[in-house]
Length: 76
Image 1 (spheres, rainbow, N blue to C red):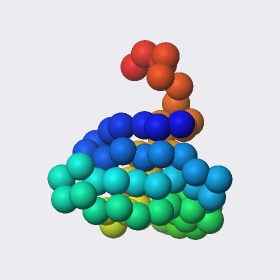
Image 2: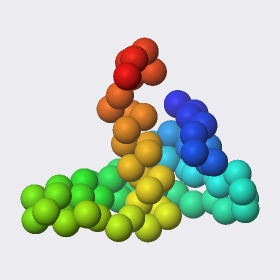
Image 3: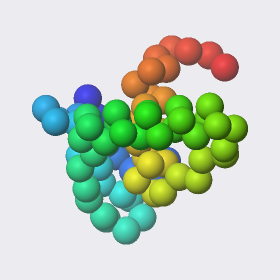
Image 4: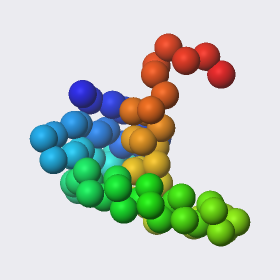
C-alpha cells in the first residue's frame, strides 16, 4: 500500500511504513510498535483531558492511522 498525504508518501512494509517527506526529502521508518506506543500515549492523554502536542513523527503516525482506519470511500 502506498499513500500520499500531507506532504509525505508512506509505503507499507512488513514491519510498518517507510515514510518520505516531500518538503525536505527526509526518510524514516515507522514500525508497528511505534503505532502501538502512539495509540497508548494518545489514549492516555485524551483520558486525562490533555490536548496532546504531537511531534512531526507523531503527526505522520496519526495521519497514517486515520488513512488506515477511514476508508477512501467515506464521505464527510
